Structures are given as C-alpha cells and as structure tokens.
Amino acid sequence: MSGIIETAPSCLDAGEPGLLHEATALSRILAQCVRVSEAESVPLTAAHGRVLAEDVIAPLDVPPRDNSAMDGYALRLQDVSETEGTVLRLAGRALAGSPYGHALQVGECVRIMTGAPVPEGADAVVIQEQASERDGLVYLNPGHRHGQNIRRCGEDLRAGSVVLERGRRIKPADLGLIASLGIADARVFRRPRVVLFSTGDELCPLGDVPRSGQIYDSNRYSLRGLLDGHPVDTLDLGIVPDDPKRLRQVLEESTRSGDIVISTGGVSVGEADHVKRVLEELGEVSFWKIAIKPGRPLAFGTLGPGTLFFGLPGNPVAAMVTFVRFVRPALERIAGLAPRNPLTFEVPCVHALRKVPGRTEFQRGRLQPDAQGRLRVEVTGRQGSGILHSMSQADCLIVLEHDRGPVAEGEMVTVQPLPGWT
Ligand code: AMP
Ligand code: MG
Image (cartoon, rainbow, N blue to C red; front, side):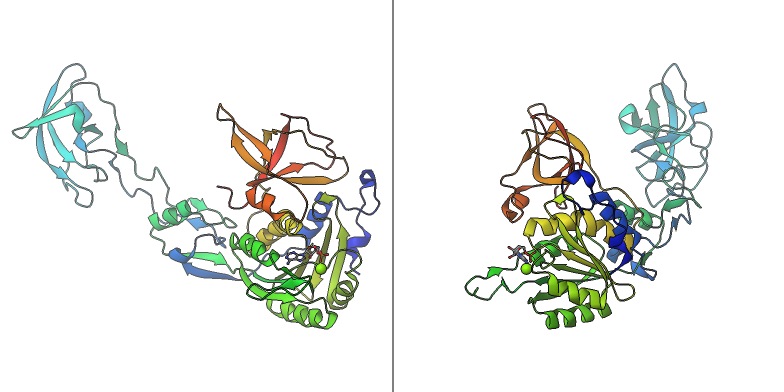
C-alpha cells in the first residue's frame, strides 16, 4: 500500500472516521502529477487548445508601422487652423498595402484608407465625414487632435516582449496573435495519453441487446465528452468485466501505453476486493473514501513508473463529478498548464437546500437570469447519483462547501460552470 493513505488525516467533523477532506485528496493527487516533458512543433492550424511549451516572444512590432484607423485624410496639424476652416491640397492616395511613398509637404494632405501606412510627416487623420473634397482641394473644419485616428507602431505588441507565456492553453485569439507576428508553428507540450475503460459485469456495449440485469455502459460516453475538452489523446478500451485476470491484463496494457488510466466502477467496498488486490499488485493505489457527495469512493495512485490511475465510482453522476473535481486538475497539470483554480462564482440560490456540515456536496444547477437580468441558480431535478438526466439539464455544479450547513432560499452559493455550459 502506498504511503499516501496512511498519512491522510480524516475529517473528524464528518461523523464518520476515515473520510478524506476533498481539498486534502486533491492536493495529494496534484502532488503526484508530473508534467509531460516532451514538446513538439505544430502548425498554427493544429495548435488550438494545445499547451504552450515555450513563451512566445514578439520578433517584431504589431502593427509594424503607424497606420490609419479610419478612411479619411492624413495631414500635418501645423497646416490646419485651430479656429477656422482650412483648405489643403490633395497630394495623392495611401491604401492598405499601397503606401503613398513620399513625405507630406507644407499645405498638403493625402487621401488615406483604413490600414494604410500614415505618410511621413503626417500627424493626424481627419475622417472623411469631417472633410469635403473638390477639384483637388480638401476643405476641413477646425478642431483636430495630434495623433487622432492613427494606430501606432507596436501599440498591440512590442518587439521583444513576451506575448504569451509557457503553460498557456492556446485560445482562438492567441492563434491570431501568433499569426500577427508572422510565426507559423507553435511549440507545444506533447498531449498526455489517457486510457479509459468501464468495469462491470452488468454493462452492455451499445449495439448489443442487454441480457437480463444488464444496463448500457454510459460512463465511457460522458467521460469521453469531458476528455474532449482537454489536450489529451484518449485510448478507449471499452468494457472490462469484473474478472481479476482480465482486469490485470488491461491494467498492464494501460500502463504501457498511458500517462493516465481512468476506469469507472468497482471501487466501492464489497465488490472492490479483487480490483483492490490487482491494483496493489501492479502499483501503489489507495482506496479513498472522500467526504463528498456524490462520489465518495475513489481509487488513486500510480501503476508502474509514470502512470497515474484514477478509479472513479460507477454511478454516472459521481463519475462525472469526480472527473471534474479531481481528474481535470490532474490532467491540466500533466498536460503542462500553469496551475489555476477552477472558475467559480457566487450567485443566489432559488431554493432552500439541505446540507450537513462535514462533507462537500455538489448539486446540479442551472443558471438563469431573473427579471432584472441578474444570474441566479436553480436545481435541475432529482439529485440521486445515478440520475444522469438532471446532470444533462445542468450547466453548473452548486458547490456546498465542507463546513457549510443548510442553504436558505435566496442565499448566495458557489457555482462551478460545467464543460459545455455556454
Ligand atoms: P460500482 O461503482 O461498480 O459499484 O457501480 C455503482 C453503480 O453504477 C451501479 O449501479 C452500476 O451498475 C452503475 N455503473 C457502473 N458502471 C457504469 C457505467 N459504465 N455506466 C452506467 N452505469 C454504471
Ligand atoms: Mg461495478
């Protein structure tokens, strides 16, 4: 048995000895997570969602030169009266991609379009709505400022500056930002390899007709959906029966190919004995009872060098909640993401909720604006850990903290958005 479990403090206030505080479980898990070390270069078109393995440093200024923010006339302010109308001579045109090419002389202006380089000597652009052009002359009203309607060289990105930091997950705007620097490839961490399977003699694969007492395997599908949101490669091994020999084979194979192995089912007391034995033989795995609802049983540890194992509970909602609360932060750490707390915020709860201090509870919630457009949360329906329908209706978890008691109607509660909530 690993040293992990022996040193686990129990939650004395939980009314049940040996329960592990959620935060303790998470910090133990994170302490075992080692970031993948290998990096690779991928074209920008394949970089969305990947994790930067190096800082992106700007090789040039963006924009590379002063350019016009509007369609209008580029001019020298010193040629324009501050108090009355001015007439300037139209000397030429500047288009995006086709500069004027000369310095402005006294009394001249240039027709300029959005994105066109500002000619040398010009220090303001007057928009076309505030000017009129006739017979090669441009008539202007007074009241212009230095630098107006000019986008300055380097005002978006400065050459030499760190534009994006290592450990950042690349977002759509980041792709554009990197492209604006003329960089065609991103240096990213290798995607961690996740091996996934379900355990249980009662599980029937999709496409088969369930035998008496069988149910369809749903966990693998919700977990595949959750994994899709992460920069990982998933190997799905399907359903593994409650058979120690077969389980051993599958785990040995998983250890060879995976950085992280995720199974569901077979970790609660009673049926878990052979799973436990196999896991103990293959690695250092602890069976935790965590002070959370749903999702109390969780197996966690290492299988051989460098492979983490998560044995999630079989109940469909418990499997998803434990993924969101424990597996996801671990995956992020291993994938090389900079550590961060999950996004949570507080909103009033529409209902009163029952809650006992001594464990962290999660209810499935839906965020709804009230008549004034302020967000509040309501519970989506029956909360049994096998009721997947209320999870499907939910866009967030209502997180009722460990020490918290019952919630009164209208009281503020913490919510954590679920993947796919927008
Ligand atoms: P277990 O954790 O194996 O004791 O399973 C707890 C409950 O979850 C039982 O009712 C199982 O039938 C159910 N269950 C386990 N695995 C799955 C699965 N992959 N899909 C749907 N339900 C499951
Ligand atoms: Mg089972």
